[in-house]
Length: 268
Length: 301
Image (cartoon, rainbow over all chains, first blue to last red; front, top):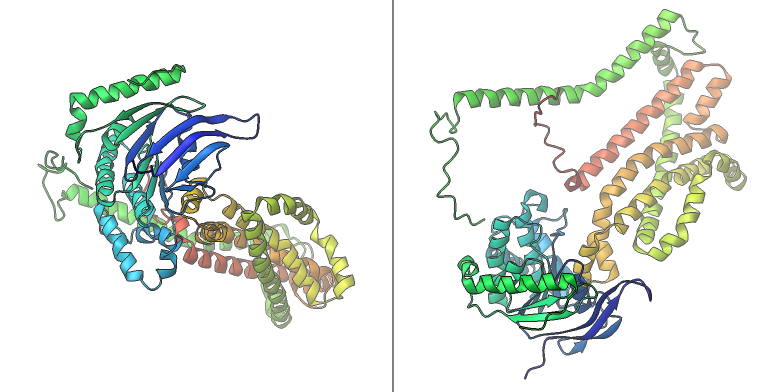
């Protein structure tokens, strides 16, 4: 079997020294290349910590994180990230915001001046894919929250990262916009096929998007359950009304309740 | 945005009598009235500062005349104006000197303040190491420093330049440092996860983000820079508006002292306006929305 793209082996993470909060303990998790996984769990269970460990933003207190066959010892340069807050730069228009990673990541950084037109076309194509054609020259504050989040997704994907980390990217949006963006994200994933780790507390979102859903226990977080999601793609909103989908969400919901009570539930 | 439901939702205006743009005559009238009110309000806003200034002088003049205040206590605006006419040559020469020393000191403050602000804002170690010293330094009254500067550099232009610099660099340092230090952690993560170096983050995010803070500090700094140079001139100089005012007051020429104050105020306001103009050019993105003065609010004047 091929080696997993992301391997997290028995990782622990403690904040603030020996007496600090233990956010993760004994977390083990593998993600195959091109796979879309979702991590769900009660609030404060260390989901965001997990993301920061995988991208090398923080070092783990114990255990190993291996990405693309290499031990993570510092920030990765192959990751794209998007957060709940779109964090677009207000002094740049949408096109320049999306192109920000190209000014930072090698080898694009060196080629940007020479291949500007080509890169701009890539950015515009990507914006068009998420339904933002014609908004390139607008500034972030001229756009709605959902549109800003689309731009933020584009920024996370413009340098064609092998790994896409999404930390509750749609949590601040209304339900209709969120459902729109699910299909946008699914389409982006089907076209580009990055490895995606989506951290969310929305169970329907996890079930709709992911190939595999992992449930974390409350702090210190561990993976306590795993469900393969094998609905055919592309999934649509209709999928979410099928009995299978409902029963999956229902299952996940029970695991979360159990995790919140601190009980351990065996894999079904 | 994809909008599948638009077919079901009827336009709200359907069924009412439509005008030129699909609006009823009643709505058109109301819209025009609102636009006219907005225009009146903008005109008032433009004229208000001038009206207040003129009003202040009128009240001043009237009070001096009515209570028969002696000229050496409070000269009337007309006396001050007459003094300005009479002494226009020395006033002009000395205000050039003051403007020059202030701008040179202010220029140094900008360069030094930016550099130190970026350094402090981007390094927690430097921040903790240097901040107490800076605070202590800033708490020293600058008047007390002038005699020392005179010992070192003698009487003249140099102490005034240095005083203007010392008094005006601190706001710049603090503001630039704040702007850089408050970059959102998530944004920092986004860039770090791309492999951005520390200098990349400062250059792409920190500095642009700090610009509104920087310009806010310029507006404070330029006005206090005048305070600095004039303090130094009153203590140790043979040129400058401060020097002129000390001379005039020793001769009990109170209208000329006030004339010096007027000239200083005019220079201060002019430089402030320059800073504001530059600010709106460079960091217009930070004041978005405040330019929509066409808004008419209920209960507003």
